[in-house]
Length: 148
Image 1 (cartoon, helix red, strand yellow):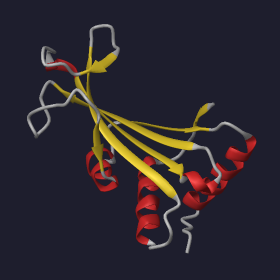
Image 2: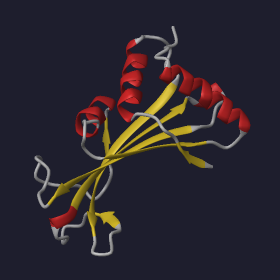
Image 3: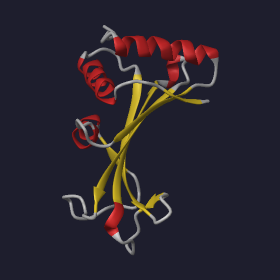
């Protein structure tokens, strides 16, 4: 089941950077990607195609965090940030119709910007045990606690 949670995307990214810098054993799998979408007249977002009119181009960044397989937890934290680019191509000049993998630093540089984009933070949980394990993770993030 997926739930929206009230968590600041910038704080999560900063915490993850701190966690990676702590030098401890990795505890999480972190995946980041970017995709470009066009907004059709009906307001639905679709992947960009070469024939699209680029009047309503958006870029969407997705950051997913989940515990490593051997940790016994099965939750997934997802941060989705959509930023409307308008009627121009990004600085690179071309867009891919497939999601592009990114680094955590790249995700932060491209999507975690004050007063830009719309962020949605959700968590997927399957069981009460997953909820308990996620709540421990959430507590670590909120209190800036890292594994040693």
